[in-house]
Length: 435
Image 1 (tube, rainbow, N blue to C red):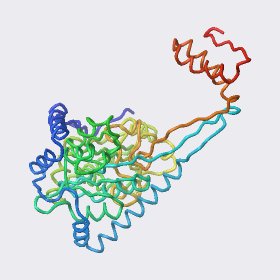
Image 2: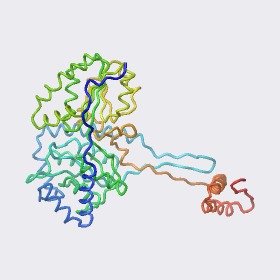
Image 3: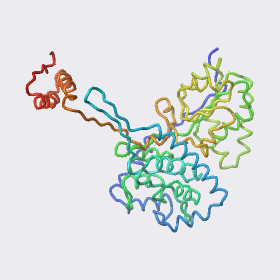
Image 4: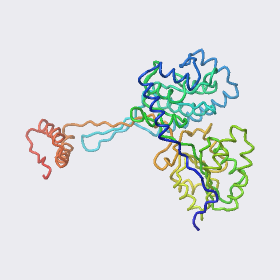
C-alpha cells in the first residue's frame, strides 16, 4: 500500500520573501544610521506607542501589581519547570581536558555569551510563555545581561503578564518596542543597552527576516517559519483528542500546517469529520486562523503500517510531533526528526507551549532534520584550548610541519620548525612533505 492523502494541502507556508526582505532591510538600515531617534520614529509608526522604551522599576512594579495572583502562580509554576529543565541541560555541558598524547593537553571550556536579546510576541496574542522560555534559559546559561523586548499596545504598553513573566525570570531590562525596530535596538545597542550577542524568540515574518538578515553579526536561535505540528495516531487513538489537538495548533496562524499521519482509515475519516465543527466552536479571533490553516495547509495521510508512519514523519521533520499510539517506547527509539516529541495522549503540544518545562522555541519548516530548538546550550560557546610541555609538543610539531608543507602552507610549517629548532637544537628532523 502506498501512502494515500485523504486531505492534501492546497498551499505551502511561504510569504512574499523578496518584498519582506526589502522592507526589513530598509528599516534596519534606517535605524542603524539614525540610532535611537529613528527607532523611536518607527515605534511611533508601527507600535503607536510613545511611552518609555525601557521600563522603569516603578513601571515594572505597577504592571506586576495588575497581574492576578492565580496567574502569577501559574507563571511561577511554568518558570520553575523551565528553569529545572534548563539546569538539567546545562549539567550536560562540562569543562573537560585530556592529555591527548604524552605532555600535550587539550581541553574544552563552556562560556555563556554576555548579552542576550529575547523577543516576546505581543500582537494578537500575548505570548507570556515566550518570555518564560527565552529569559529563563538565558538566565540559567549565565548571560550577564538579558533584555526582554515586546511590542507595546497603543496607550497601554507591554501586557502586564509579559512584564511580570520577564521580570521574575530574570530580565535585566524590559523594552517596550516591537517588530524590526525592537530587534534592531537590541542588536545595535540602542537606548544604552549592551549590543546583543544572540537574539532569540519567535515573531512574525518581519521579525524572522530581521533575524535572518542580522545573523552573522549577531547570533540567533534559528530562522523560523510558521509553526507546524504532526500527529502520529493508530487505531487505539481517541479521535476527539486527536481532532482537538490539531485544532489547538492550527489556531497559531492562518499558514500554520497541521498533519495527521495514521494507518487507520476509520480514525482519519472521523478526525476529518470532527475538525470543522471544533474550529467553528472557537472564538472568532482563533477561528479565523484555524479555519484557514485547516483549509489550505492541513494534510491527512494514510500509511501502510507504523514503520511507514515513522518514515513519513521523519520526512516532514515537524516542529511538534505527537504520538498517540501503542508501544510508545518503539516510537521514541524509531523517530529521529522533530523539534519536540509528545508521547501519549496524556501530554500534548499545548503543555510544551506553556508550562511543561521543555522549550517551545523550536525549528520549523523541516529544520528539525538538522537542528533542535532553543535550549540553554544556544547561549553557550564551546571553546577549546591546549597547552604542552616542550617534549610533548615535539611529535605534534613534526606532524604539523610535514602536513603543512604537503598542503603548500610554508608559513604554518615554519611555525612548527622554529619550536623544534629552539627546544631541540641538537636533534635533526626530516620535515619535508615527502619525508
